[in-house]
Image 1: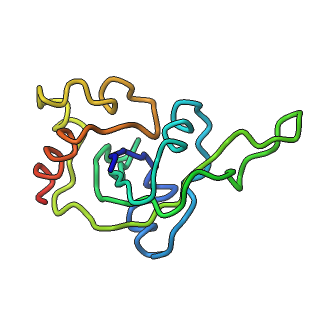
Image 2 (image 1 turned 90 degrees about the vertical axis):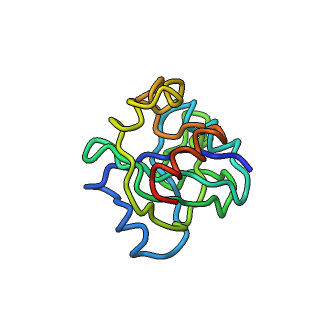
Length: 141
């Protein structure tokens, strides 16, 4: 199993919004090749942290991949008629009992190389198993 972190602006699509819908949904609208490639690498059952970006800047929950990469329904075809943007479908699994803030993550030397810290603008990033375990512990799991 691989681990990931996926960002969403809480005033657009918050953890509570996703949980409230309670159904698998496309993680659509990503327009960055590295983030898209990360979603293409995801496997069924992989888990991802749900991160509130811009407002809050904190990890608030865990989701899992329930559908592999497929064309993003919000993407327009390119000039050759091909949709180059893909996404996966995600389902919420559980909230973190204690949200883990970006400031708290940056304060931990063990997390200094985390993609969230190093590649701060990347909306879908990799998380190592050691980073996953530590953040779960920090979040009360």
